Image 1 (cartoon, helix red, strand yellow):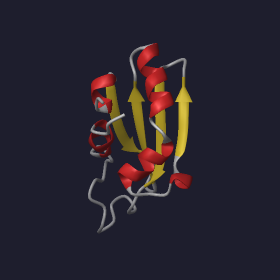
Image 2 (cartoon, rainbow, N blue to C red):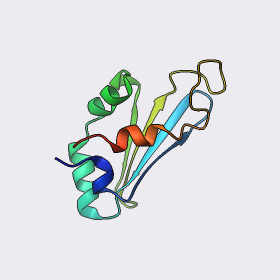
Image 3 (cartoon, helix red, strand yellow):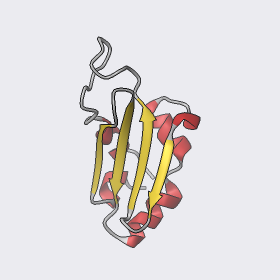
Length: 99
């Protein structure tokens, strides 16, 4: 079973304000989009990031062939416990996920 990053064009994460992170999966083809949409469960994303699946917002955007997840940051942006102020490293974790 392949890692997510080998199936898609790009996995990107970024800030969505001081309390939220957004992860975008750019699939690049209809086949890749359908595979990610169908095989990457929100509960699996919650497991990867150690959070409750009920707090994750999922957006499947077929016209753009993008699957997007928004989730609460584990620490407020810029706080003493924030280890990734820009939210950029979260993409690597999801990209390594096997689906």
